[in-house]
Image (cartoon, rainbow, N blue to C red; front, side, top):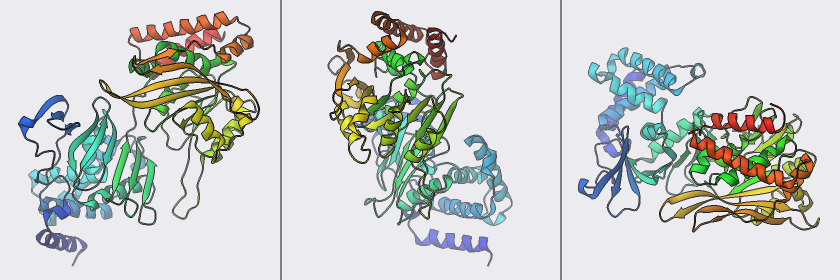
Amino acid sequence: MTYLEDLLKRAKSESAGKKRAEYTAVTETRETPTSQVKTEEKMLIDQYGDVKIYKVRGDPLLLYEVPTPQYKGEEKALIDIILDISANTINVNEALFQTQAEKRARYFHKVMELIDTTPELKIPAHSKEFYANAVVREIVGFGLIDPLIADDALEEIMVIGVNKPTYIFHRKHQMMRTNITFYADKDITDLIDRIARNVGRHIDNQSPLLDARLPDGTRVNATIRPISLNGSTITLRKFRSDPMSIIDLINNNTLDYEAAAFLWMVVEGYGALPANMIIAGGTASGKTTTLNALIEFVPNFERIISIEDTAELQLPYDHWIRFEVRPPGLEGLGEITSDMLLKNALRMRPDRIVVGEIRAEEGYTLFSAMNTGHRGAMGTLHSNNAHETLIRLTNPPMQVPRIMLSALNFIVMQQRTYDRRKGLIRRVTEIAEMVPIEDDKLPEVQVLYKWDPVKDDLENTGTPSHYFQSLAQYTGQPLEAINNELKERARVLKELNEKGLRELDEICTVTQNYSLKKMGKF
């Protein structure tokens, strides 16, 4: 018996002896819980492309519906056979393709060729493309959640187990249920295995957790049994191809013109006294987004080196070196930590060090660098307020000596909170300045800007900035000139917004030229 004959015989046997639910996911003809909602109980509130978004009576979450392929049991069995054959016969050098579309087209051609040259499959001519598309969706794409991956309006995709709807976080409509449901844990684990292989990682009962970055920048976290008690889960945080600029943050009311202008001045520091800064906040509060937007104020003649757990930063700079940590391999060897990368970066004559997330030994190394002349360091850290940020820095695993904290100039606090009218919002809640006092005590935290949740405004507290006084002395200008410059830069940002400029490279060009003129380099 040939390999193909064995596959066909086995598939026919399984098709006859198993219920369809055992080898299909949401794509069966059965109705999912969301599709059972009566038409009169849901109201269409938005649509684009193939996506329809409904308000369902009695449900606080909106419903996200997208067309899903409907496979019968026999069709799913045949798709599995073609997948099995493809895995053993199709060899494609994926390194040759620059885009996902090119890769899909090549695999489609190969699968169609396989179907055409395998008459034993008995696929009629009018169904060949149907099967080829289904197989390519599994090989190259993400199976059931492929339509979600393709939607740029989504921020996160959450598969939480079998017989439960897949959830999404939409950039406009926030958390929603979808009409996509997995009915077999194997379908989820197969998808996880495929993702793991694509990124050169492994997940099994001994190592039941996957945390990685896909080639397009999407962050993926997956868990399986035994640590995931209710079955396999997948969380995908999609990579935004169009990064948010400072103007986008202003338009979203994350901060205002004056606060943005203030951060512009302290990040740039007239090219002479750039401030050391940490952006702190809770999970998914937008810390990295704000960090990315603020780095556009770094003068473009400077050498930037960034270190990230998962590469997310997108900067319009030529002289930018990116490092990404590497987890240990299958044998527990080959790990490259943030601290190792940071120590290496300090040997590379950086003008700016950017640490995507400070959470362990790299905190001590970063502050050591700040205290030995490296100015303008930036990074993010998980905490709830400025004082807690200092406490975290001085305790294990970072253990930064209190005397070193004097090198930190600012903590920008950002939080994700709920507003009854606007839903979930992201706001800069504080811009705090660190003022050193005694060697054995934490710096004094002086809040310069504070968010008023009632007005939904980031307000200037009127507290004078010690950094501005230092900047005036360092540049030989009166303090009044520094304060006037703050107003002028707020005006420039407002003018950019009024002209409809918002893309990162556009804003960067204008702010860079402005800064270079001020520094006498343009």
